[in-house]
Image 1 (cartoon, rainbow, N blue to C red):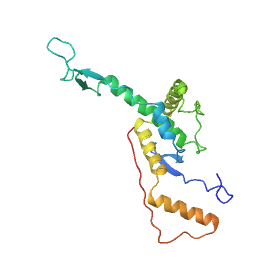
Image 2: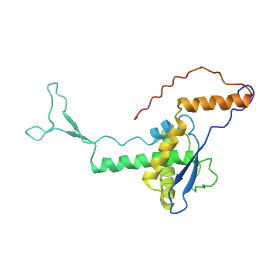
Image 3: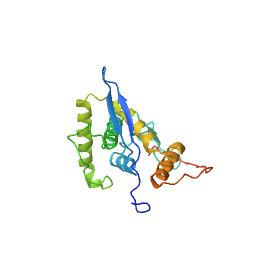
Length: 195
């Protein structure tokens, strides 16, 4: 895309540091591409909910007045918790890798992405890619807490705030040699979803 015939300025990056003895690790994060998080979460959906049914006196499935089985959801079984943690770590690994893509200090053996995340036939390739990234993060002594921290830092960089929009507007105006409008107010509505 061009604006008035020119490429828009590059988005800002964010430097973060992870404690490693006396010399912390410096990581430069860049904003995630539009829609990547949603696509990645669709590739790594939460595992199916474990359903348990109430039992009647005879040991069969209890039914309500409409003859529907009475369900009792038990999401926190050890197997469900393990599967959910694995899917979250896969998601975090892919998002952090994408956020680190512009940092020349980091090279990954598992590089590139295995096709469009929206195509279901790429699911096994994405799982293998995410698992390879997790293995590399683990070999580099990254903890799951550090991956969560980096995802949170990416969110700060990716989700616009009123201040970040004003700063971007000012940078754009400076690049064009114009003054930003004064007195204008911005109203931002950011919707976050757990799905």
